[in-house]
Image (tube, rainbow, N blue to C red):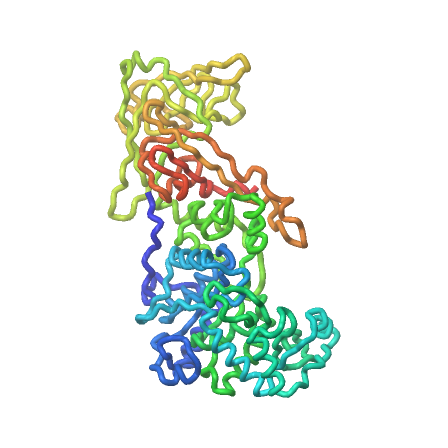
Length: 604
């Protein structure tokens, strides 16, 4: 059985820990070589410029962050980002903060906060460094953000706009037409400050006005056309309660969070590339006022994960859950980390996947088989083997009583790990063979097709780990349905004995003894969508749902699986890799999920 615990991190100095270069590694290495951030100081916690100036030289060579919004469960794209940020920080002697970007109170919940913490830990990463927790939330900085907003107003870099949302949108212009100045843009700092404090004090309705940065309404980058940085929103926040009725916009909050936390390299996906000029503009203005330390963080963008047959939109994933298309956020068909975990994915397989797909600045599609291949590679050497019959039919050895004795059960064994770690021996699994065994229904054909090597009248096969048998036929019911397959035992051919090779056969089939086999529920999961890009081009992704993405069968498994614990992984020989379901599996009532087949069945 495999453990779900993550492996210990490799020492960065170890030659075996060498990773292939990418542009993010090159940026970090260049900054370290040029001592770009070597003079930074760290106040022991996030804070403004004065706070850090009073601190010590930063013990972390680099500081990064993983900043999810707690408005849903993390998915495989977030797993890539976690591996990038935490992995690079660990690799270069740095620190990675876990920060909750909780500036949108209407969509956030402590359930998602707890889920994110669990996901990062499960993936094998931690935010405790140099005696510090480095677990933060943006809402803890609301007081500073308000202070920064007042500074921008007082320095003439922000104003309160009372246009409607539609008027602001129309006056922003487009890619060929410059924007039009708001009629409120020329207010004095004193007037704007008074109005902003009225917003803070709840004197105006939601949506009545916003605070905008004053930059350039004619900028070629629409994001610099006086973006909104604060709005009125009466909503109870999961952390700050009802203290605030105004909340900062994400594009305003995010660079401030990075600056207060002394982040050096702020890695995000390409959709934020157009926001980088505002990120720099804002931090330059706040640095001019002595509010944030310098050198301030720099933002770098990489391509987001586009994985075939997968959706990563939280809104669309929530729709699948809310409409009952899946059983929940942890449904094994979901690309969420909790879903992948329940499916049988391991931390090591997702880390391998993230490393294998690399980091680039151009969008591309990653085939789903790459994700599955990473799991196969990690389970091949660690998952204990076992035999399972998923579509059982009984095989009766008609001469068993005559050759072996009535009621006799012959002990058999096979290695649990065909490729044990160097210097170790494989554990052994034990089972018995008797007069009756279960085999796969597909392993018998009355009239065999060309090339068929399994059971048909007159053909010999080996029961894996047991004896050679010769098929004599089958019994059928009135509808022609096979009820039993019949065969005779070939004596003195037991696997592992001197006579095992006395009879040559062209096939060995898996089986489970009727006497000691265990009934189990097996859930055969497949890809959730039939379309490789289910929502591309505005398509209705629900129309490409795979109607066969889940089939539940009652299987018979060998007795070595009787003591399987939830989340234990196995290879069911010939069928694939399976995991004992972490929710429904229990001793006496086993439930196994198909994690991945032995080979890519979609490659064709």
